[in-house]
Length: 157
Image (cartoon, rainbow, N blue to C red; front, side, top):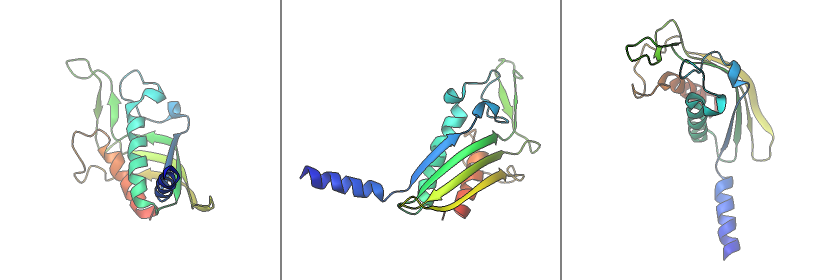
């Protein structure tokens, strides 16, 4: 009975797509700052949110059994981080059309046998990021997430 349950669990997990997200030298990224004194990459909430979002969303677009490996080589969040500009002396991010979101990454899609189906180097930039309402206004990464979603819908199906 246990063997049958294990086989069922294994076959169910094998049917889903796998996604792996890596940040290459995140301390050199253009702008992923969350405050004036930059967080260490492993403690940066923006990187953690981008990883979670990419892993979750990409599985929706990949066929079962395929895997995606994505290596971010640069991220520049929408807007610009301005230290201590409000009366409470807390840091803020000013979002204007002067600073569009940008991301550079390499990706590789493999089939269940490990054969590479597709790979490329990508430079994303959304110059019209502020021309339409997107996601929740309280989500600080709504522009980056929309940009990633557009890319995934187009390239991962």
